[in-house]
Each structure stands twice: as structure tokens, then as C-alpha cells.
Length: 150
Image (cartoon, rainbow, N blue to C red; front, top):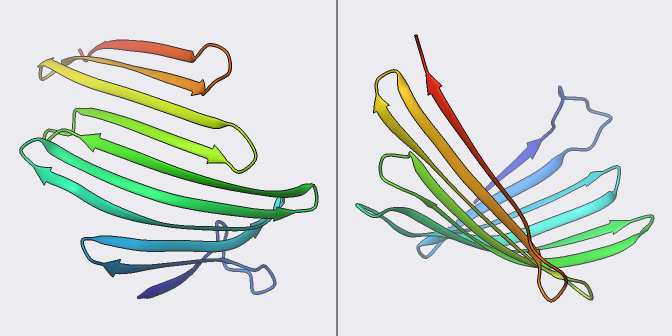
């Protein structure tokens, strides 16, 4: 098991740091983080594992939980995430579901792809969908970029 103390700025002995840890368990890793921010104290723990990493690409699954203790109230949430990249690393997709305890369930999905036409020309395209399940219509976005280097 490894434990690290990380700060986003330079090391300051008067400022507490986030503590992260990870341990190999079976085919995956159990991980956790404890720390504080302006919103209060927080903790996150979970498990992540490569489901496959072969000619189909790499698919990683993750399940996690978070807890925040703050001056304006506390919150807890659970979530799960799947990340896929193809072998050439030019396509990716992500699906994440989160559930706030005593709150809404959210679904986020995104995908993107890069097509290289030649060494100087490429097309990048992607999209996202976000939905609070059971409420309203989804938010979505699409984008594309055509790039040619002269």
C-alpha cells in the first residue's frame, strides 16, 4: 500500500495536505483520498479495474463513494464509471452514473474520435449527453474541428 501527501501549491507546513492511498486487490486497485477545501472536509474511496486491455482497446471500470462534511451541510454520493479508449488512442467514450444520497441520479456520457486524413489533416468530433434521471430533457452538446497544418 502506498500513502502520499499531496498539495496543489508549494509545500507549506502550516497548510494541511490531501492524503491519498491505493492498494492492489485482486485484478484492480482500492483507492482513497482524505482532505479539506473551502467547502469542508471530504473523503472519496472506491475500486477501479481494467476490464480488458487488448485489440478491442482498454476498458476501465470504477465504483466509488464520496462524503463531504461542510458548514452548509453534508452530502454523500455513490457512482460508477466506464472509460474506453481504442488501441490507437484516437477514440474514447465515457459513461458515468452518480447518485446523491437523498438527491438526484445523474447520467453523463461522452464520446470523441479523431480521423487523420494525412500527416497534416485531421478531423476531430465528439459529443456529450447529461441527464438528471426522471427529470426533464437531457442536455447535449456536439462539436467538431477540421484542422490542416500548412
